[in-house]
Length: 248
Ligand SMILES: NC(=O)c1ccc[n+]([C@@H]2O[C@H](COP(=O)([O-])OP(=O)(O)OC[C@H]3O[C@@H](n4cnc5c(N)ncnc54)[C@H](OP(=O)(O)O)[C@@H]3O)[C@@H](O)[C@H]2O)c1
Image 1 (cartoon, rainbow, N blue to C red):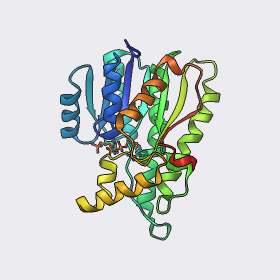
Image 2: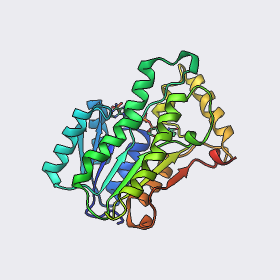
Image 3: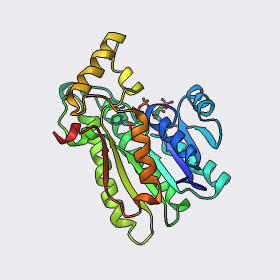
Image 4: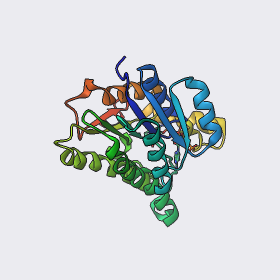
């Protein structure tokens, strides 16, 4: 097992990619804390994963909630080895229609949240620790109507570069995981009907050189690699799991 005796914290670990990461981490021997806003989703994730999983109801965009998450982990374990900032959402909005609220919600959850979660977890981390920020292949691409989303995800690319330089003598590594299109709830919320959703899936699959969407387990196996000592010479880097979409 590649994550035996490791303590991991995952934001948005109740659905899609985050849930698959949580499950893979537990399968690899880690004890995992997941957090998200919806209690019923947390309960369901615990039911699916079974053991070695602690749910915390918390908003990854609220600094006071992040303090509470750190507190729970500190009191229970006194340390953390792996921190995954994964929580996210997408709303397609053309530049002309972007509101301050849309911009703030995007950057609060997908740029500010990951920065402060990392900052607040650092005192619990030791040499060998791994920070993973879940970005998106979209930060390499120019996809219309995604200014705030892709901009926040691009900020994460910069964060791990900067932190690689700052952490240089600590033994703590920080890397990005950039998924391409995966058929999770994030896509479901962009479609009004089942037909719309099928059309969205087909649209994205046709963009991918491998002509399919990703499977969440494929993102999770990259996360296990980044979390484990197998990636011990990687920091400040970006692992792109996108079927090639951002490279053509
Ligand atoms: N699926 C894709 O095609 C794709 C592509 C590229 C990148 N990504 C990135 O991958 C990550 C996971 O996406 P997914 O596809 O797995 O989406 P998902 O199935 O919709 O899951 C999103 C998760 O984030 C949590 N979350 C949302 N807002 C939150 C908040 N304010 N505080 C705490 N938790 C919050 C949700 O739980 P609650 O709602 O209960 O809070 C849920 O657990 C995101 O960062 C996304 O941008 C996804």
